[in-house]
Length: 502
Image 1 (tube, helix red, strand yellow):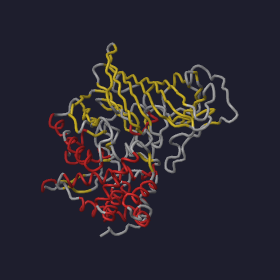
Image 2: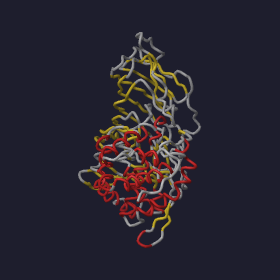
Image 3: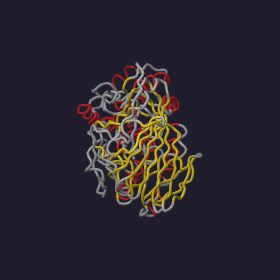
């Protein structure tokens, strides 16, 4: 994620160009985002399932799954008692705003004997719920949907839950987020922006990055519209005056990375880079010069593949939304970017596009196990951004690192340790440029060869998984064959900024 507040100064081709971006201070650009669900409060403590609650058989060892996973920053996010392996999501949309109808089918494996379990879910009216085909009872408790199956679920059993629902997508407002999140809509179409915990405003889920899953999407919309989602387009079928679009994300994905775009969009064929299909989804009124600028994606992908290894997915592209949120977001394989940034400041757009693309390796393929590990997302993407900025001739990496080092004492005084952010500072400068500075210091400590071996091994070993700071520290020491305990104690777990090595 990147937002649009001041960070540094970039000098392309000898000219001085102010690039405004400071990670963590949301600064909305002018736009016409409509939040159709703002007036709908979350449902609380009411049974919504039809038919009425069935009888339940409960073995002696079955108990309710927990609400929340105990994440130190977002304790209510996620749920205990099961691991999701796949979401099959079907949506029907009539317009670029207003109510939707949907069914979420969730395949999971119980990690305990379950008499009931929780899903993260906000708003909507639930019209049906089943577990393994049998009617299940549901109860709402704030943003928790409590599901009680007709028969308790044995530990280790794989089970399938289907929830049908309808209504206007609600906003998710959270102090940890840089703005309103969820399924947002603008004049020309809807788009998803769900980091960190806004997926619950789109579909019932285990809304935490530690539980990644495969996804399929079916989106039915008027034939005059275009639909797009994460992954590869696997089908497109007429349905009367509508069109059904089907997408498959065949690599694990965290819920906050879901993208669903429906509206007046064009799809641009960007060719291929090393067998990766490049396709962009853009508002139809985007001018030709802006469309051509999207070709920078191909150069950036080739550049990062040289540094980090093969791009981890089958397709990539940018979703250019006409009424932007206050940030760009690395929604897996289809990055959300504001059209106004492309029109107002192309150099800024290029640099942020590099940041978001780098998340494909660091954040999407390799995701945080806890939200306090977010520096492993944002620090890595910011350091990749610095390397692209240097490569493109905007500014040298050394200058960016020195600039961050000069500001880091202020950041640590205000925000604390890099690996210990507060929920309200989840997207603060400590987790972006401050964390990128950690990687630069590591590079200076172990040398280029070992440093890039660490980055490649980090991606290759943990591709498709969720990871912790401890795991990165262990891998860096292993690959570099260096005792780095003192380094990480000083650079990651201290409020004092050390001098740069060398």
